[in-house]
Amino acid sequence: MDTKVVLDTIWVLVTAMLVFFMNLGFAMVESGFARSKNCVNILSKNFIVFAVSSLGFLVLGWGLMFGDGSSFVGLNGLFFLGGADNSPAIGDAYKGVYSAINWTGVPLLAKFFFQLVFCGTAATIVSGAVAERIKYKSFIVFSFVMAIFIYPIVGHWIWGGGWLSKLGMFDFAGSTVVHSVGGWSALAGILILGPRFGKYRKDGKINPIPGHNLSIATIGVFVLWLGWFGFNPGSTMAADPGAISHVVMTTNTAAIAAILSSTVIAWLILGKPDLGMTLNGCLAGLVAITAPCAFVSVGSSLIIGAIAGILVVLFVIFFDRAKIDDPVGALSVHLVNGVFGTLAVGLFAQDKITGTATGNGLFFGGGMKLLGAQFVGVIACGAFTFIIALVAWVIIKAVMGLRVSLQEEIDGLDIGEHGNSAYPEFLIRKPVYSYVSENKPIALVSEGSLKKEGR
Image (cartoon, rainbow, N blue to C red; front, side, top):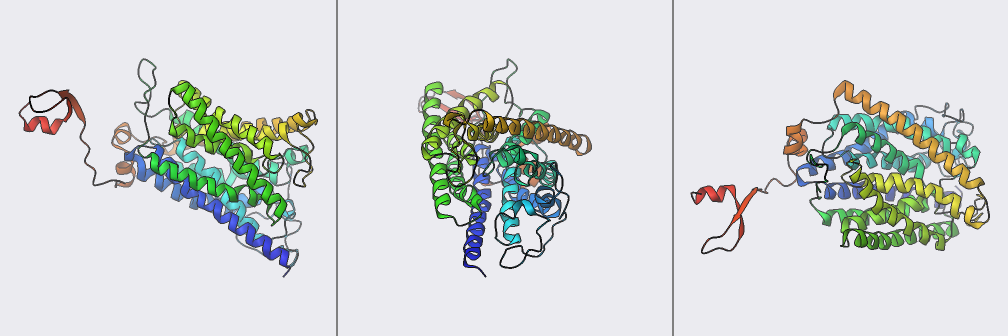
C-alpha cells in the first residue's frame, strides 16, 4: 500500500477519534450548565444521541449525503452497511457511487467514520438547548430524524457535490453543515417546547436558573477545545503538513480571541467577568472559525474570533429577553456563530492560502461574489433545516408528546425519566427564613430544624 495512503488514513482516523471525544465535552458542558436534578438526563441524552445518530447515518444518512444523484440529494449507494475500499492503492470499486468524496484517497470506511462523528456532533447540539423539560424518548426520535434526513441533505448540498458547492459556497469543516444545522434544529425545538417552568415571571422579568457545576462545564470546554484540533485540521482528510499547521493556528487563534472579547464584553454589560460567558465565548470562536479556518490568515482569524466572542454575549442576552429559553447558550454559540463563521469566508477569504481556490473575500478585493454565495447558503440551509425540524417536532409532539409533566419538571427529570440521581447522597433542605437568637447570628434555617425547636 502507498505510504501516503497509510499516513493519510492514520491522520483521518486519529482526528475522527478526537471529534468522537467531543461527545464527552458536550456531556460535561451541558450537565454543568443544567441543574443537579437533571444531570443524569443530560448525560444519558449525550450518550444515546451518538448511538442513535450513528445508526441513522449508517442506514441511510451517508448515502443521502455523499451518494451520487441530484443536486438536491444523493441517490446512489444508499443503505451503506459496509463495502469495498476505494483507496487508489486498493481499487476503485466505489467511484461513480460516492464521487463527491473521492478527492481524498483514504479507504472508504475511514471516510465514513470521519463523517459519522460529524453527524453525531450536529445531533448533540440540540440536547442542551432543549434540556430540563423534554421527554427522553421524544428527543431520541428527533435525533434519528435529524441524522437520517436533515443533516445529510444539507451536507449533500455543500459537501456532497450538491447545488451549493456548484454555486461556489465553501464550508471547510462545518460552521453551517454541523453547527448551524444543529442550531436551527434546536431553535425549532425550543419554540415548540416553550421555556422551563419558573424561567420567566408573570411580570415578564427573567428568573436566572444557574447551572449546578461550572467546574464540570469548564473541563468540558477544554475537552471540546482539544477535540476541535481534530474537527478542523482533520477536515483536510490528508496528512498535508502545511494545511494542517495553518488550520491549527487559525483555530486556536480564533478561540483565544473569543475568550478575551467575551470576557470583556460580559464584564462591561454585566459588571462581572462571568465564567459561563467566557466558556461559551471560547466555543463561539471555535464555531465561527470552523468554516473559514483553511481559507483565512491567522490575522483574520484573530478578528473573526473577537467578533464571535462579542456576538455570543449579546445573543445570550437577546434570546433571554425574547423568552427563548436555551439553558446552555447553544443558539448563541452554534446558530449565531455558525452563520457568522460561514459569512466570514466571504469577508476574509484569501485565495489559495492553503491551496484551495476559493477566490478572495470582500475585504481582500474579491467583491461580493464569494460573500453572495455564502449568504445564499446560509439562507437556504437555515430555511430548510428550520422548516423540516419544526415539522418533525410538531409531529413528535402530536404522536408521543414532547414535554414532561409539570410535576416531573419540578422534581427533576433524573427521577422521573431515569429513576435515579447523579447525587443520591445529597439531602437538600429548602431555606424558609432567617432569624436572630441570643446564641446565633442571622442564619438561614431549614424547615426541619424549626420544627425541632418548636417554632
